Image (tube, rainbow, N blue to C red; front, side, top):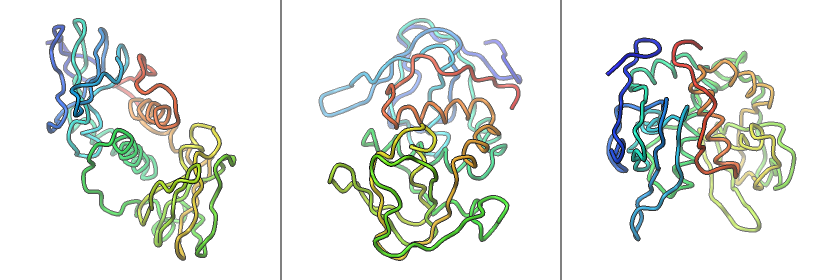
Amino acid sequence: MTRSGADLPTRRIAADTVLIRQGEAGDCAWLIQSGELEVLLDGPDGPRRLGTVGTNAIVGEMALLDDGLRSATVRALTPVEAVELSRDTFRALRGRCLPLTSYLLESLVAAIRRSYGLSQPERQDGGAAIRSSNSFATVADRRMFRHGHSFFRQGDEGTAAYLIQSGSVGVRRDGTDLGVLGPGRIFGELALLANRPRAATVVALEATVCEIIRKDQFAKAIETMPPILRSLTRIYIEQLSGGRLLPHHAEPARTDSP
């Protein structure tokens, strides 16, 4: 074992080694420096390959970001060298984030787990630290919307996202109801961050109070994130907005500076 970055351990992993097993608890993640790994999702018909990852990718981080179980199995296809990132390291990185970006990361991880049909850990109603009732300097625009209000329609341009403070909204795509979101949930952020049209229509199901988060607020907040978390945010957005399911290469993510 060698050392890398801010005194972080580097592991050399033999081919065919199972680095992560789906359903287990996680205590560390890995930043891949060389080699290739496959990502497998267990199903009723056996494991299904989701894709492969290589240099500069990060694996195993979702269980550290939301304290959930491992979402997939990861196996080395070739000899791999990877920097080991402990749970404490990730907590320290999240501690350097603005409340908005920390909460956004958690929301993106939850959305990815849902997209794979995976169970999610219990989430407390979140977002309190970014609400205008706590800090007008963080999110300045809190409004109440009447029952039936259309926040946006599928295909619209994305200009703002919304954090629900009270009430609920319904999400609908191509005439199909996708679900109901309640207090503590963010919606509308993917079109904002991926620069794509709205993927669904969202309507208030009752009188609903939301924080309005503008596109420029998201962009500025993400640029303040530590590089590893900024890279992860962009990867998650790409996955959820219809890009590659799993990136072969992520944006280089340093471990020693913000």
